[in-house]
Image 1 (cartoon, rainbow, N blue to C red):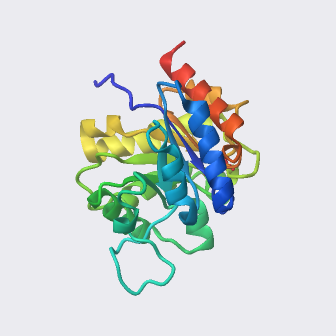
Image 2: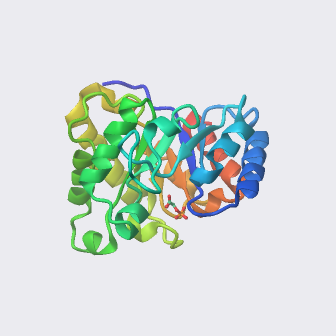
Length: 258
Ligand code: PGA
């Protein structure tokens, strides 16, 4: 049994918020506040237009940058899209399969799978998002749905080096209705951890598993206290430096066992 735990991670998903100037300001505030904060990886995921500015703002610090989406082709006639080769060198992570992409922009498991493969092939770490809807939970299918999303998202993948998986129950995103730590841990140990282990063996133990959905400084410790939860993907509470940094601090503290 490997006892090593993935390095804790807190990722901020800014969604379609912040102008380029605001993004740089927010990134600089996070960079300054994160100075000396060890034991947790901090990733900022601004809108595309601010990726370069945020990357420049955090350059030389431990803060990392991610995109919120990506096309799977490297170039071509795909108006409005951004490719893996364009992201290479600008950011090290990319959020893929977020429920808003799935629900509002029609992304399917197959499309998400192509994007995950493209990201891994280009050395960009995918933060693969999975999660059930309220209707799926109420009909008792949450575990199956999430396990299926993990399998489909990773179909044909052999090497999961760099992979991050985020469990974000759709009913908990932006609603203030966070999943209880026990509910999250049940899914993350089972549908995420067990599925990844059965697919990838010991390599699965290296994959950081993030909880997402109404995480804030007041509830983050209860998630970080769970063995199967290694960090969080934060939306609303990542739009201001102080609460986001507090989430990172509390995560590092809980995961170091102090
Ligand atoms: P929230 O969003 O923290 O605002 O609920 C989380 C997410 O969608 O990543």
